[in-house]
Length: 228
Image 1 (tube, rainbow, N blue to C red):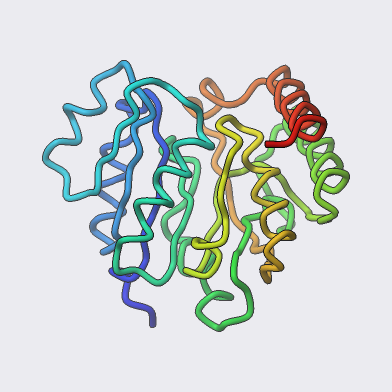
Image 2 (cartoon, rainbow, N blue to C red):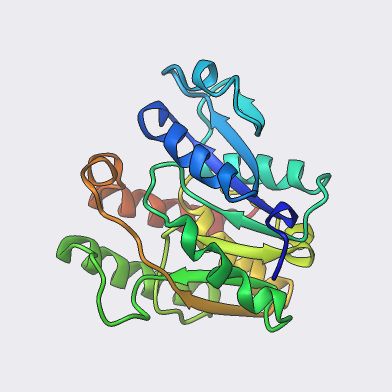
């Protein structure tokens, strides 16, 4: 069994002070390394995390989840770890599913694993969210050529090869599609893994709106027309 200390969790956080402490406590008890990127929070996130044994990074201003993940991944390259997990700060992801998510990496069957809500018979995805996700799956396929069963849930894992290869330029939520483009560009092996995403009250309140999906699409189109 893989030593949890060889697994690094990269957690982007923006104004998550009300939920992040119990989450971190559960992750640290399991023995994982944690890199938390405070993306310019205006609440008391920094103060409440001062006594936690984590790698704490902070953006002076809010740049977006993609930028926070890139900062975390860049920092994680210098850590002694073999596997790296993107993990949301809003308690939607289940720490108990981390071993399952990284299993194909440990078995050297993949370089990156993408969590999927739709690979199991039962899930809690609200109907409106399901419609948006179906559209996102199509958009991902059109922009990247990768046909997947899910999109944009933020729960993914990679080995060091993928960590070194992937570079995110999309600062906002469009980074999720960019990751797929990076998988294809770098010819990384990938697998989808069934995961459970919890839609509790806080997560629903802070979750992405339907209108934000149009913002993501516009960002992708602009970047397609005017690449960096």
